Length: 134
Image 1 (cartoon, rainbow, N blue to C red):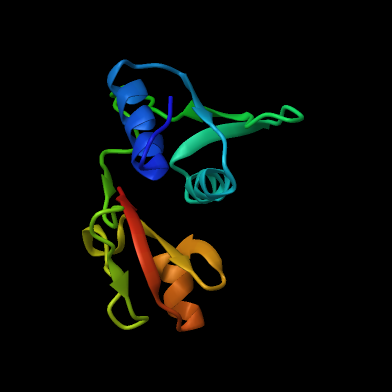
Image 2 (cartoon, helix red, strand yellow):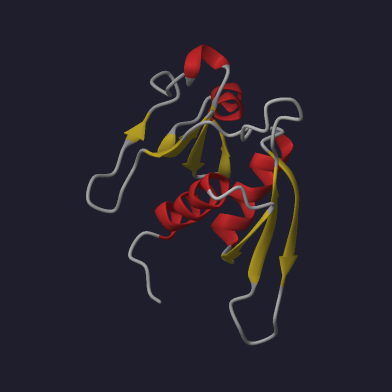
């Protein structure tokens, strides 16, 4: 299946897996999705991940989703795509959004790679705001 927006597909697969209470979700791999997965892990939104590389093929990312121990609710409350193929959203270093007053993260594609808004502000660079997660 060919998707026109792989980032939206990535976020939707995670969202749907959480709604169905799955422990693991498998997503087709790309370098951008791998970096986004690493950021989600570093920020504590997922338990663990594994990159399965197949020579000559696309490969896959397996993500172990994280749920609250007491309530059973998913740790990720919201995944929202900001910049889309039809409407790109760029922001300078001083215009980068704060998500949920600093409790969430936004992922930005910059000239120095994929990073969180916090890291982009520290480096004083702007870029394309890909998505918000909280």
